[in-house]
Amino acid sequence: MDAGMLKTQLLDSSTLSLEKAAAILRDGGLVAFPTETVYGLGGDATNAQAVAAIYAAKNRPQFNPLIAHFPTMASAAMHVSFPPLAERLAKHFWPGALTMVLEKKAESDICDLACAGLDTMAVRVPAHPVALDLLRKTNRPVVAPSANPSGRLSPTSSSHVIDALDGRIDAVIDAGPCSIGVESTIIAVREDAVRILRPGGIPTEEIAEVAGQEIATTGDNGIIEAPGMMSSHYAPNCALRLNASHPLPGEVFLGFGNTDFGPYCLSKSGNLQEAAANLFAMLREIESTGAHTIAVAPIPEQELGRAINDRLRRAAAPRE
Ligand code: TXA
Ligand code: MG
Image 1 (cartoon, rainbow, N blue to C red):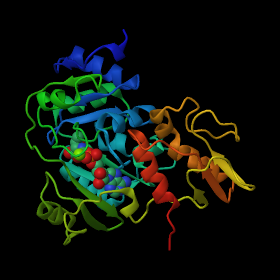
Image 2 (spheres, rainbow, N blue to C red):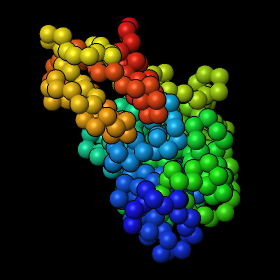
Image 3 (cartoon, rainbow, N blue to C red):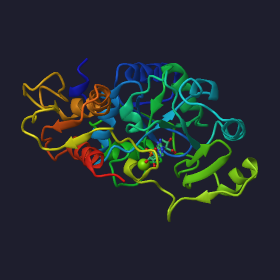
């Protein structure tokens, strides 16, 4: 079967269909699935190519960090650490429309691109029975932003997904309309303090009550728009020089396309999805060599190239 020739498959929520969907996810494909909040566009969180394909399908201009979905708190706890307060909130609100940003464990195999290079990871256990069944069958962390093109409304039915993404993703599981219809509430939990990063399906008041504390909301709308605005954002320890045609003495070159300046190349064939999948891991790898400056080849300002350039410009910007 050549998935590239097919339009998106519409699946029902039978056991057989969910097994099919899980197999697509494990093979690196993209499956939109229902949650109680909105339909998510799922991909294997451990597969950087799959994560890059999510950004491409959504036509997202930036690499926002994504939410990893799990069937249980125990499965999430293999990838992030739960301080006691986070554990208490998880036990109360999961499965449900609460997402927690927690410290990523070193042993997690979730790819850097899914976290946009951060040391934290957003995790949630959705309440929708179809989502839970799919996650159990997939048996891997599944990242899922809302299944809509960037800048458009979140989908609350499979037909919304098909209208905008038909032919751009492998499958959509139809299970009727979402019961909540707005995205999950995102909180950051650090030791004994909770902050709201995005208001959503679970009211702040309920979280405050279970947490036993008043809760501050960040910013106007509470949404962290981009990794560059986050306190712990990834910035390499070395300088970056962008749009470099070749390395100067002492620089390590990060190529794109068929160049011949050392071992690091985002994509020999000039494929932007492959480049996106490699970006964070390669920056970290070069950083770990103790390089002083990374000279980065020009990346075309189109499709995922816009997100790659956005991230490179942030990493290259002077910092305090
Ligand atoms: O209801 C939902 O949460 C839906 C369904 C499908 O689960 N998913 C969803 O994902 O809304 P998305 O991609 O729209 O939300 C991800 C947002 C990011 O844009 C960012 O604001 C925040 O979550 N986020 C993710 N990881 C983060 C991190 N490590 N630190 C801070 N914020 C993070
Ligand atoms: Mg969204």
